[in-house]
Image 1: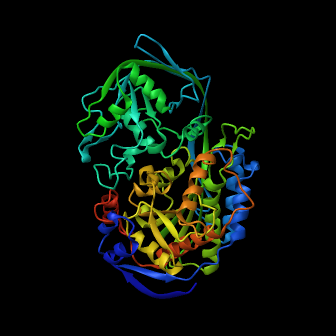
Image 2: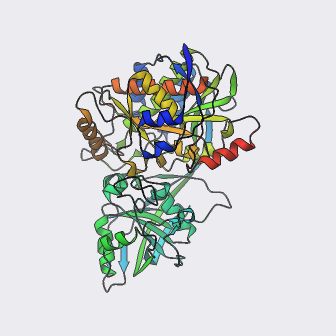
Image 3: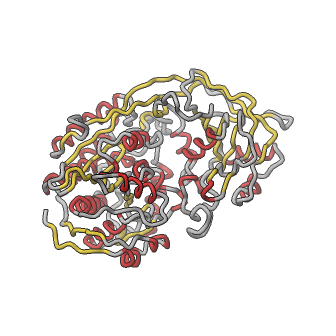
Length: 565
């Protein structure tokens, strides 16, 4: 690899050049050492071959704990070795991740009583639910329903939807997203239309459990959820994987689930309430939880299996500072067998999501190895159980093979678009860290521009594996394919994204297609290559921008470390 003379960026210049969002103006004023990087020798044949193989029916949808996992781990270990990496975990290619698989069955309807009539809602079409408890039988019996708005308890934002209500034994009925998701801009107590972590379903279920609730039910609404009911139904039926729980694990609800929006409207109407009116009131800091005077019941059985899944780790050791690490992440797992398509196909192959990102790990590893070892070590981490709540990434971040205080930063890759080249690249979570400067340098080299995420309300920054590292202080960059396509512009890009979300995402039709145009993917991979290579050749330790939610964690880690940042 050839490095051109180093140049320095100041945050003020970057904020102007990126023009990502208003929040980009808060970047740090620390100058960064950003080497210019030549293009990498990245193999399209590798991308195509690994994506095709991982998403074939032979891999059965790559569900953790299945034959599909065994084949996936074997393939990645073989390809990492062939690429020139070394085993990343003390001589092993894998890190064991203890999980439990719970498969619900024999679902009773969700019944709601107390209004003089009994309402009954069928599993699948009208509601879905699971338990996180390792119990053979689950029963929610006449649990009082309480509408808790967005289900947020955020003292630092002076917001508590549970204030004044005792939730023990009750079931929380919760709105999706967070209180100001429909804001026209990024202003508001929860960052305006840009979703915060408080808008994620994972947080809502965890907070309901902390409040002592017996159940938690989220009201699905396509716009604020950013996906349709088909995604919920597919994702929340069939086997569900969770992290195995220790003796001192936090409490759990009995049932976590979702209901269709019109189902919620019927329930609230029976309680003498109006969904639209309560939703409007829930956007205020003065909102108080509303007991509905109704009781919910349901039951189902569970098949329980404990097993160890695996993260796959390869490393290209650094030539000068091998104990400083730049991490690349992508999840190898998908949903396995799922709700069949009309033609009977019941394998969720996950070709785009995320065989493409997993293949990118292999392709980038090959390219970096060909270029020779950079100063810092490059880590390639294929994590398990992302679809179950980022479990593999969280396990690694809690049990890091390479210390987080010595991890310079990272790049996450999740679902490449295969519709051809774009003039831009989509930045998910712009303005959060100084990694934006490394992205800008790569964009300048490739003659492209950055565009802020067109759907900040979807909260994508909190929905992929990089979040497990970010919440523990490691700066992580998450970019996605651009929507300003060379052929068709933004209208064509938006149509491609909408078609994927509506017809393929988390369904059996996310399948490999020999006619895909890989040129855009290869352009995006050059950005990832330049960013990773520049971080590995740099002497800087990029940080979160002042005021970012993760800055204090990183500062504390750096202050406590004798060898890192």
